[in-house]
Amino acid sequence: MNAVDAVAIARARRGPSNAWFGMAMFVAAEATLFAMMIGSYFYIRFKNVQWPPHGIPEPKVLAPLILVAVLVGTSVPVQLAALAGRAGRLGAVRGFLLVAFVVQAAYLGLAVHSYASDLKHFGPSDHAYGSIYYMLLGADHAHVGIGLLLSAWLLAKLVRGFTLYRLNALQAIAFYWHAVNVLTVVVTFTVLSPAL
Image 1 (spheres, rainbow, N blue to C red):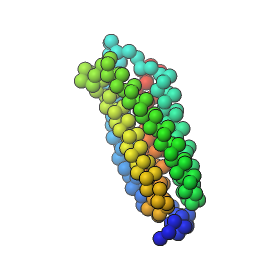
Image 2: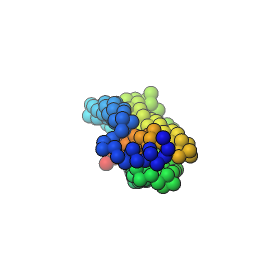
Image 3: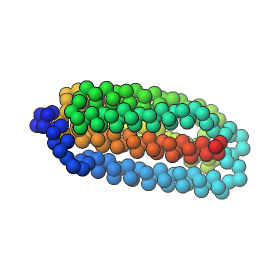
Image 4: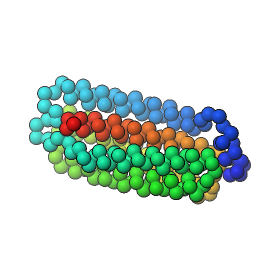
């Protein structure tokens, strides 16, 4: 099957592909995991008089909010890439994915730097706050990292052009990024909640 046929099949499809549904099931499972972690965070928080514990600085608000806004903004080029894929515009898909990839990688680098600098003040084994704080942020950063790997894989595959498989992967990966961006917003507001 050539690229033109793959695009025609993708356009003719009335609903999402099996890859999209598979990603939706994966995202639902991961959302459940995050719901349990966030529930644990608030359970522990409301059982403690002092949150965060004495001696731990309140979370900084401005930088994390700017970072999460930048990450959420990458949903635009990712969605534009998905739409360009359905239209058969390979160059636009590559360009939009590359722009999103660069911004997402910069976000992850800055977020991991902030994560590492927090380790200077307290560790995950110091108390319940440290444990849940690092678990939430670590899980979120891992999901951003997985998204970067998926995007890098897709960009490498798109060097050889479209196939139906790659177009389906594009739709599934776009869905994944939208879900990760939503999860990142929820996680960010959860860990910033003591300062808000």
